[in-house]
Image (cartoon, rainbow, N blue to C red; front, side):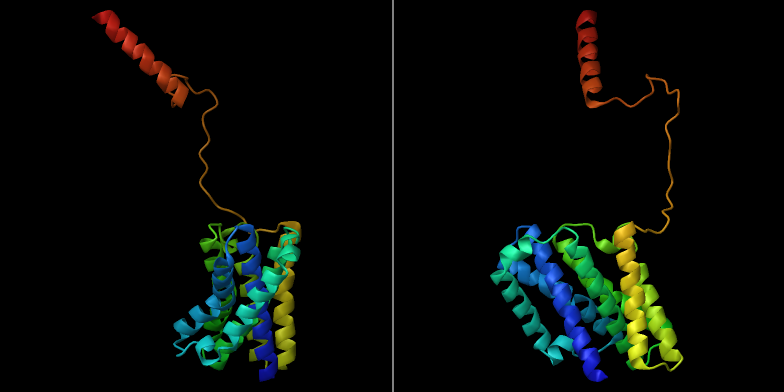
Length: 238
């Protein structure tokens, strides 16, 4: 099963790297910018996870194959740039959803192998799935998906918890992986399709219905007119 986990990890890197390439194309970046976004998306979450868990060196230093996979993904994308440019706007969030599901399972699995508690393993799974996309979006000057209204990190938390529960029940590894992938991917795709979101709590201040115009804040044109009136009054006094 270690081979299955490894190839799932590679699949997640490819999918996330591709999402970075797509966003770079839409942001009109050069090939180096595409490579940077692909790299931070593909290995950023796993790198942060290893640093938090104290794994030295991080996974891609031990196995540079991850870097070659990212480089190959960018190279193929450059060759097929015109096909990528024609992809629909919905392809990026869907590809990101697949990467989120794969990396959530990988992060949770690795944390459990290192002997962490279930709570920590769930958080590490979420971090692995979310952090790379956050860095990608910040570099592209976009609001990260995890901070938007649609369910994102919650899907990763749910998938991680499912994996931890089945691991505690000593269920077959294939079953635990399939269940966690299904829950994470299902929740995320459902949120994309139906715009599902958690409730938002915020203080809202409503203006009074009958507000005195004199006490209302002046707009820029009103301020200019008021300034002209003041100058005229000063001239009349003189």
